[in-house]
Image (cartoon, rainbow, N blue to C red; front, side, top):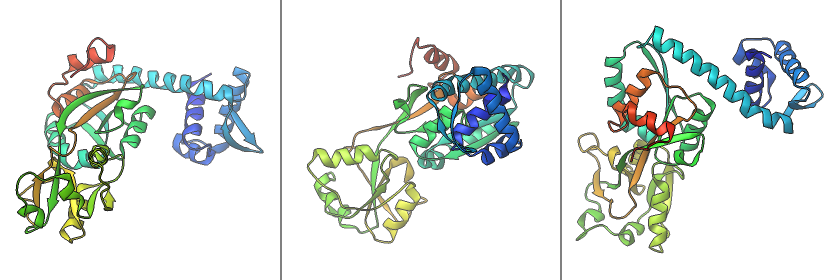
Length: 312
């Protein structure tokens, strides 16, 4: 048994059992990948994959049991490498961050800029996706850090720590009738207009839906998008009223729009930063985490990993 065989098993499962893709990922030949899989199966005495002719179609029951162990062994190998790198090259190496579009666009830029000044030899790789995609990248090891509002706390493999709270704002063109109302904006007033907001699963959309549902209202959502800039663009075109994260509105930048505070309409949201519970983090990764959320010091994170304490 060797690590190359384990990598062949892991990448085959990840690549939808396409050995051509696996060979490209591992810089090997397709017959070589097939041989490595067969050799490991022979050593274990079981088939890991179901075959249809020469094609692999799915994991066998023994394969499903073995895959998490394979992934853990390879993760431990990567952790071992990181231990060595942290002592031989403390301030250089890769850092992969997965985040939702809103976090990448509005919360991360200044943090990334400041971090780069302190660690110019660290190579940053920023992935964007839905909260579920962010979680998947963390679980697979593709990302070191994940940042999102929803979903991260739902995975037992991940340690999801709260960073900051935020609310929503309603954005409208200047002169819109909602700006002429008396008193605080109500859900009833908002529901009279076509709504443009986030897709389901993004940036607090669940709290928006829950807010209307609890009031017995069915909003007319005419357009949904992943990114607040897209939402604001269509609001400017007069297609509807936008509901976006408050951090996504800047009065100087968004001169063609006006914002109305909606914190009283929808539940407060919590942005979380997550890591894999089994990952060994290099020193500069802790530094990045603390730059993003000052309460998440290295000591606080290490205690949370051990389960002795969790940041509140």
